[in-house]
Image (cartoon, rainbow, N blue to C red):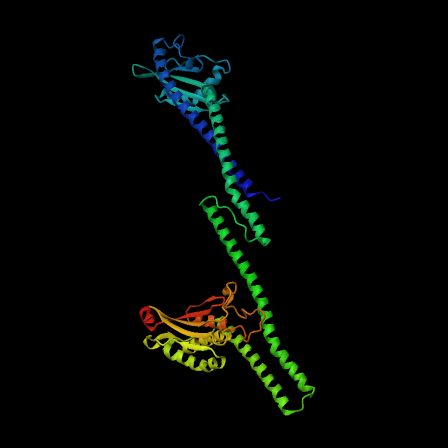
Length: 477
C-alpha cells in the first residue's frame, strides 16, 4: 500500500522538527556548560590568587586559610620552589599524593616559570574531565612556588541539571505546539489534492461537471483553478463531441434522404423503361426527361457538398477587389425578375444604390450569397407575397438584407439555420439540398464579414450580411 503524501510530508516535518529540537538541546547544553565553566574558572583563578597570598602569609601552610565552599570541595596542591616541598589540602580520599603529583607533573614547570594554567582537561590517573587552574605563588615579586586547583567538571556542572530539565521540557512543549498546528495546516492543505483525486476519478468516468472548491489564492488554489478550468473545457469538448456526433448522424440521415429520392426515381423509371411497357415515343421522352431532371438534382447536390467541403477545409482563397454594390444588385435582380413573375411574387430592390461608395469584397461570391438567399426567400414565399433586397449604408460597411413575408422561422430552429442539411421543413418535402445557407455562411466567414437572420413566425424572415467599404481598408493600411 502506497504511503499518502500527507503521511510522508508530516513524517518529514516531524523528523526535521525533532532533529532541530535535539540539536538545539545539545547546542544549548554545550554552550551553557562551557560558559558556566568559563565563569567558574575565572572565579577560581581569582580565589587561587587570593589563596596564594594567604598561603605565603600563613608560612606556606593551607591550614585554616581555605574558607569558600568552592575551594573546600576541591583538591588544592601547593609546591614550594625553594624548599622543594609539597603541601596539599582536601579531598584526597580517591587519590594518593603520588597520583596527584604524577598528574600535575606536566604543568608544574610551566606554572613555576610564571605562567598560568586554566582549562578543562584529563589528568593522568583521573578518569573524568577535570577543571584545572594553576597559578604561581609570588613573594616580593619573585615566584616561590605554584598552587593548583583540581575539581571534576561534573562537580561544577551538576548544578546545571535543573537547567537541562527545564530546557528539555521547554523544547518538548515547543515541539508539541508546532506539530499540532502543522498537522491541522497540512491536513487542510492536502484536502484539495484529495478532492482533486476524487474529481479526477469522476472525470475518468465521464462526470465532467465535477468541480473543486477553491480555498485560497495560493499555488494549490491556482492548481485547483486550473483543474476547474480543465474540467470546464473537457465538459465543453464533451458537449461539442456529443453535438458533433449527433450532427454527424443527422448529416448521414439527411444526405441519405437527399440522395435516396433522385436515385429511387431514376431506378423506378429505368425499371419501367427496361420492361418496355411504354412503346410510344412520347412516353419514352417523358421518362427520359424525368431521369434527366433527377440526375441534375443529384448533380446539384453533389456540387453543393463539394463546394461546402472546400469552404470548410479552409483551402479556398477568396480574392477581394473594388466592386460596385449597384452592379451586383442589378445583376441579381435581372436574374430573378423572371422567376418572380412566374411565381406571382412582388420583387423589389433598393433604389439608393448610386450614392453608395465602392466596396471591397469578392464580387462573384457576393452574387452567389445573394442567389442563395433569394432562392431561399422565393421558396418560402406564397403567391402575391413580397421579396425585397434592402441596402443600408453604415459608417464602415454596407448592410445588405434579403427580406420576405413568408412562413418565418421558429425560435427553436434559429440557432441551426446555417447548419448543413438543416431544414425548417422537418419532412424534407421542400425543394433544395439544405446546404445553401451553410455555403453562404462559410463564404461570408472567409470574406471576414457577418451574416445573420431575423425572423418571426407568420411575418417572414430577413437575412442580413455586411460588406466593408473601400475607405475602411485604406485607413487600416
